[in-house]
Image 1 (tube, rainbow over the protein chains, first blue to last red):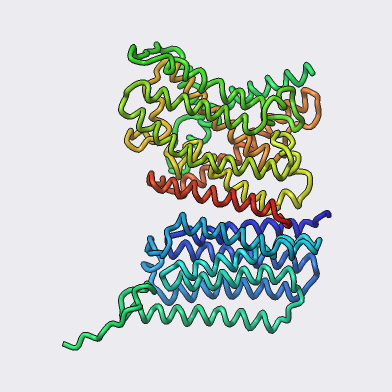
Image 2: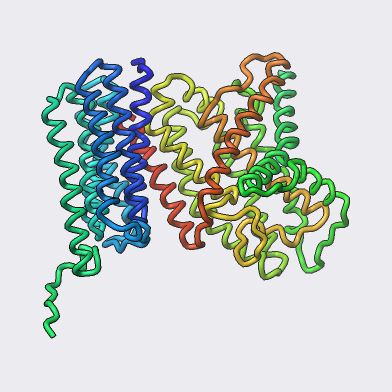
Length: 225
Length: 317
């Protein structure tokens, strides 16, 4: 089956989205995680623009624009405003699992995604669905994994957002006519989550002095002397 | 038949002639990025010329391994050259003598003897560098294997010429996730095998931090020249495999006339020049990794190559 150029470029961005998901797992610096998230969102927007062009779908144009505004511009801006720069420059986020093991687990999740989606995409000949579904699912699983393995608040938040990116990437392939209202709702939601988590992290950091989620499971009494 | 043998020899001459230039251009570009003037691009030629005119000193404590190694290191990249597409996009006469695994074997053999020779001298820095190169080598090995496996699985062949035609065949294969992942894994592999920056510093001369360089410390005169030239050819050959087989199989000669093959030379050189710009960006924007972080770097390359394999096996890849 011959593939048109926009669809071929969509598969290119699928590969790069998978790479950026791996990179988010492998990066130690908070700043780096955020940068790879932005890169992934740019790729997602590019992919939906390409599909919008090849399928002449207004919804996908809107989706791409929403992704750019919400995930490439608004979320990084909000997060950078809420927390000081030294927070982003810090390296060595303490993780529950070390990085090589994390990467291996991410790889396992990719294989799981391919195995689960294999029989489903086998029924269609649409090249976009065949590429986007497994990689979108892999994106969701890897995002969920970094939500579990990361111990800092902001990388955990970015894990949620990366899950969302994976879901959108799978979604643009199978539901090009998704109602715009759903997309808008999700986009606003995502920015709100970023604001709430950012504010919480900031307050926690001011009172407790750390943003490590793992260090917050003990109650701390107010010094009363 | 006769002409394809001639073209095969022409490929060897191409690699022999331009490998030092490639090294010189890389060194010069890097210095220019750092706002220095840097040595002339023909400096590697002058170095090789100078070394060939110097006396060779061989310690009487060494064995035949030390004497044989420079020749092996020099000859092995040439063997690889006759197996891979350097100038033409149709198989030449020796193309079916060996596949990509044979190429890997030749380069591995040269590396093995270089490491043995470094241990042979008894110089304290030699074995240290040799053991480090072996460490990088055995971490790179699984990536090599998986990359070759994926490539041969996708194109149903391990002959580089056939692999290369598979990627140009249609846009879907060229842009497929498997191909993109494979490219990144192989690029990381080239950086590790060629001793480039995130793994090793090619211009560093501090013995304790050396990885690749320290193996050649004990060689002098002709031996040193051959080691240096062989190392430069190895990097050019790896670049040719990367560019001509995997990334951009364009610009290779398609016709069988001598003029076609000759006009391919500037195109290939231009492609290599573009690639060296990419290399310079990577080298100047990254810092050298600590020794025990190298395993993470190559581990990531391994993960990416396995992901490439997985996406190519399942439908949609």
